[in-house]
Image (cartoon, rainbow, N blue to C red; front, side):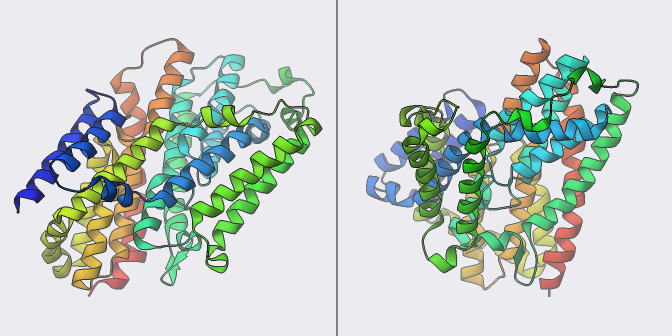
Length: 444
């Protein structure tokens, strides 16, 4: 290893350790890593800027803006109310179904936003029918974090895969002549949700929800301004369709997503007097964005870019080559089962982005098909991050909300009683179709 590679590795690991431990703010830690790399000559300030995939950043910003309007539309409450009535007072069915619904919504909306959308629904039922909220809201966080990688828009890892490999929206449904992310994760999701339904039937045995006290209120009553909800849903749908057919238009995904967000903002700015809801102005829209997360992701791209520029990623790829060349089955399995525990305790976005570059270089330099490895990394990285709050920000938010609602501090044992079985069952039920669909057909 050359001196510049050693320096860049130390600076990268030091920055990530600061992010993980929380000794200082994660954004500051990541930015200090960039500044240090520039000062030590790993990269220039211009290169640091160029290493950032601004297309991905635009996707994040734009989808968050649209999600903010979607949350105000009342549609999530409308859907949850339907689920409540369909449960017919069965708590296990209600909690399981709300979590499952949150997972599907998270395919298009950031998982933290999904938790914030559905937590009030859980709390409303818990207060009215007198049962603890921590378990259900943590389960919602687990579900939301699971299905975000099923499609391109729901989470950062699939967007990073698009950045590194060039995969399009449709590739998450069908790729290389076989089912890909949506179908494989759906198999794992259904198995895991079925287990938790069984778990909740035991937890809430003897508890019933008397829906008669809800009166004659209809689910549609949750949508206070129906034209507003229709406009939001239509523009959101059109944006998703435009991104799905991006190859036809030829524009980057970030540009398409940005146009969707701008169209929504302009429409409500021009016609705001036609709606009964108070429309947020541009300042309010921007203030509701998670700018800390944006700066962190920008810094992350620059840090990993510094590693690549110094040749560290190429070194790692060369080190993995013998195992992968000897056996794709062994290599994919090791990658899958090593990734899962790592992302359970570290910031998984940094790890996944780094390894995506490693796998890309393996494919380019050694002629190895990267897709079995891409998917093994992405799926294990998503499911394994559900172990702790360090791995998944959605769990951090869910835990805080649940503890605040129940007015108690949750023990680590109770927290793990949900996350550990969720992670183990989801990983096992994902590993089997991963091997059957994506690894064995390409193994020599």
